Image (cartoon, rainbow, N blue to C red; front, side, top):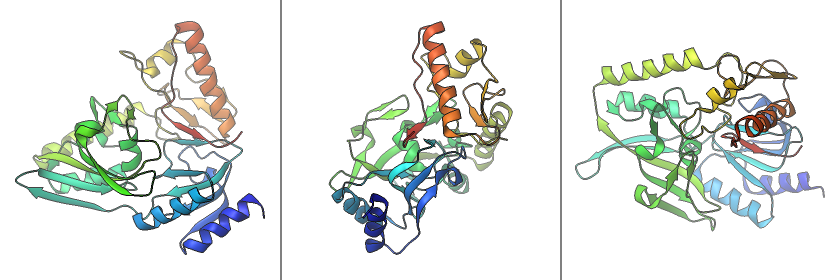
Length: 307
């Protein structure tokens, strides 16, 4: 039995939901690139996730967990294993107690846009900085996503997890170490959801701030092309986009990929790009930054799969 057939057999034996085998990831990533994954699994709920992860680990099958694949580059050789999409884990709720104040809870697969919208409905302020960020709650928490001077660490109250042994656990904010685009969750951890502590505000002012941020993004970001958002982490005191622009390579192309002429920290798929095209530009930018500026540019996007 081939490895692909083994993966298919294992998955079909434990779940009846949507499984796409030998699936082109170019149809699912925000950059519209990537080779075939052995299996793309649409997870329906947290219990199913725990079951699937446990069984795949038993069989030593590679696993990658994703919300909506907005910050992921899959290499052209595809992914050997199963990519699990948290499509059924999108619940959002709001709660208030005198002890804890106002809390919004959201499952890992929930789009940040949905959580921001709920905060507007409830007249709660604190999540405005997430407006326009295309990712999901799980990915945003995992990488401590941020924008316009705020990060997830500023609003997280607690995070629910599936640990390496398949047990559900909760970590309070004070038990998590946050850094710039990084967190301290234990190896093998899968984020199931997060609880955000917010403050009561005025709906009109919250909406005004959100609209202001969305307009800034529209003006600065190349939203007309497929992209994965910011490619590189900023350097201390220096945005990566400014550094790339200063090197004079804004607008450079490789095949169908381009360093955006609108924002140099975006690489866009300007037409029929491959993952290799995008990775060539990433490697070129890193080489130039090291040679000309003496700095190491680290990627903010997650790169998986085989060449």
